[in-house]
Image (cartoon, rainbow, N blue to C red; front, side):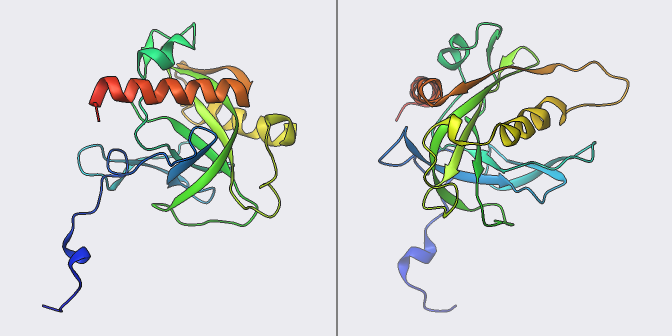
Length: 204
């Protein structure tokens, strides 16, 4: 066996529980990317081992408009659901986040830092399934955006259209819908609630 330094023998941390949201959260958060704008297959972190698993091929022809992943050590539980009046609970997953980047990032299972600018209040099968909207830190085009109003409305429309239709199956009733799009202040509330839900569910 090669004589690698000791760190090579450490286990890879679970991206949900073994990483953290970053020292500047909730304004800037670390993000683990699961899906890129080039993916026609939905990937999702396997909660038992932390590796990406194929969830399902997309049924429609639409592609994600932005990088898509989650904020580590967040959980959509009762406190997140309380911010979404039509939800009967949280979806039990880490908090989803879309990250806008000018340069194409075409690989997943990468970490990045993003500035939070807003969010989408989505209800999926009665459960709160919010999507935070953020921009890649230090991005040459988007990096200066601080509020949702700094993002062109057409781009936000693409995001809402994608999440309104990405589970669409011909001949079946839709159980996911967008309730509203919200600004940075509300997004910060949702992120803080997801931190509290995580602590209550998993502890330190």
